[in-house]
Image (tube, rainbow, N blue to C red; front, side, top):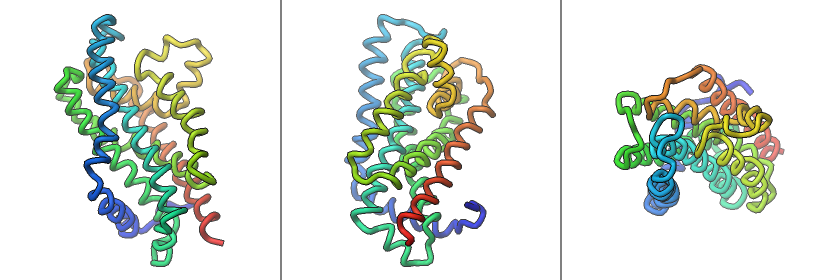
Length: 258
């Protein structure tokens, strides 16, 4: 799948169509994407943080804020790439309508991935600001650099989500993905505590997961911790985004074009 042959105007058209629909539901959408992370920050950051004090050499609120920011970007892109995209593909006939135009299936998939990442960017930026108000940001001179990284994180999780969307027979199928992939990442990739606190074999497993690299990239930007191997983390996230896109586009083409 040659990504260089994609037409940016077609991708933009898919993105803009989804934006126009989302704009009508912005309040409910933002409440869902923003509510849970805010409660985690408020409840665990203050409540649990009072007993933990510091973790990794920084206040627990600051430690937790970066993890919640990354997990929120993951969840937002994943939900959009699964439930919303599945509805447009299988129930509303939106994708088939797009394919009746000059837009190709790989451009539809690319537009969906960029849109899912854009929603991660919107909710993630809001959480970043709230984290700053609650004391979860130690260094604003580098915290602004987290904004484009949030977009990259969204791309990294939107690609695999579209893969599952393309093979899912029903909404119920998504529970396998959440139980076997999303929840383990949420628990074992450094959101709440350092990865090196886990057994060694789990640490090796965590190092191949995108959320681990997202957290290791975002946390130093929001805190006073040193940034280590940024090119590695960026490369892993890009790889998940590009490979996820390529597989999702191929599967969607086989499913929709017979």
